[in-house]
Image (cartoon, rainbow, N blue to C red; front, side):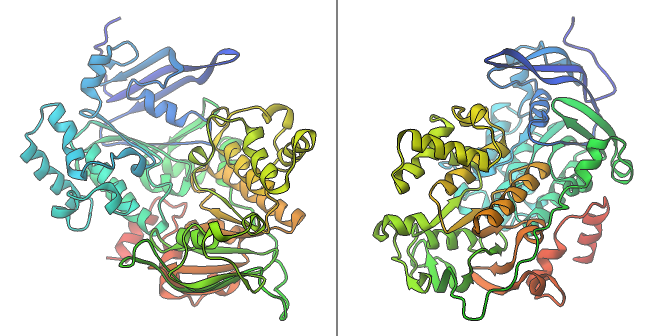
Length: 542
């Protein structure tokens, strides 16, 4: 079979099967996928975690991860059969004619090199431009992607720009060789809603200007509605259905697709307001915090968290949300102000807190992949805090770990000895919840814990947290930029911008009009299931 076979499509897959190796041998990941893509067209890939979206995106580059293989079928890129092409041939395509934009720009850039040097690497390697020409082109792309100070921003290091700016810089870098195909793998998942608007509009514009074909992988249906010409739905490696975007949104045919459209129906039941004489479980008083004395991150922040309640702290990237969490846990002592538990001051630094004080406030982190030690099994991940804080050992410790696994709705017999690599994203996040619960805390800080999860899995996590709250009278501080999550779980809301509290109150007070102008901006930036929403919003904002 020749690897050269010209077609009308820039990308065509036929009957593609990809297998992965496990203890049971080779198991199917993709099960006979067909896909076509023309120049200038954007195909949206959606489906829950484990559906095979990222595997399909990688296959479009002729790439399979370690432990996986092309089992059968075809991947034809502009007449080149990638499943049998040599690595040398594929390397001439990757970066030059096929480019990939990852979910986490922060993890994808080299922190030791300036943005513009990394941008120029591909055109220099493929001998498409001189360094001077590549730098000039980078600045042009930065302008097109609406990055601030386009002539200067490229000479910064990755840590010196915001998440949204870094994501746009990565899109510019992917465009550096003017590829024929771009693969976007969840490029806005970790961004706040206002930043996401800029990134989405920039991506859409750059694809249209250069007539580039694109695959847009996401679990956010409202986002894919703004980006895709067609939508393909995957479930456990199989195609469920495919249709033009408007048709898919108006009239999904399959029950699974309809279930995706119906997510986020969950709303936590309202709770009675705290009694007038009730002391807050945790309170922050006039907190000022910085990472160096000239770089204030949090500016005079005060709010209270009552027992059994959920306080949502919302705001854009850089607003100070996660810094507040670090102050509460003692990881970042404030420059001014104090943190109190039941109206008694806590030591500002975690090293000065007693074991009992450390136990009382626990955290669940955004990225379960990096929060869980990949080298140790689930039983140790959950067991260590139970042993440290409660002194449990032997059969008693084993029983506590099994109890916690049942509490997070995972079968102890199946998951007790698994390692994180053997878990899905949602299962890893459940293990993070169990680890926090193992300390028997009074309050759990949830830092963007659903932002990297597909909507079905995220809703399951929210339902689990709500169930645990009702069963254990648990208290949460929920850090998030997702206002759908806020509507689902919050009792009180604290809105932050530039390190300050802009607005705070009950969910009804904050989310009911009239809104503070910044809260209105956040609310109006939440994508809707309408293909015209982004275009209409950009017109309104001029």
